[in-house]
Length: 113
Image 1 (cartoon, rainbow, N blue to C red):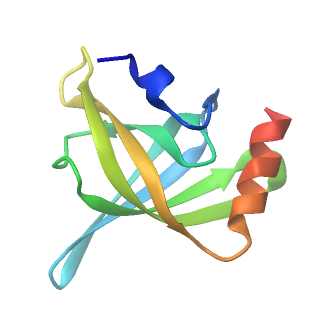
Image 2: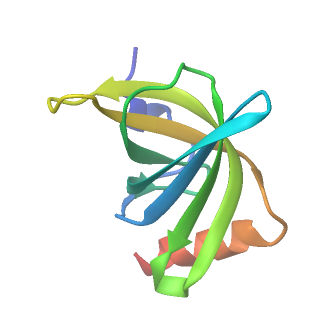
């Protein structure tokens, strides 16, 4: 199987942006604040304490620092990597649905990195 980077349609750029993840469980939800490790036009790698199941859907809000804008997207966990630190994980998320006009904001931000 080819490395993840070779399977991607869009390249990722290193970026440490604040991100808030929201996971909905029935009538309640869990929020976690963390950071991105990298970002691309179709997804991001985020650091997380604890793990969520593969294919889980998350609502993410990412602060695109160079633009002072917030990206809001429904996303899906497509891969999980355990880190050396206790309860530490990296989650690869694919953006499923962006708010209107935010695809161009994201492209502009990536071009500034």
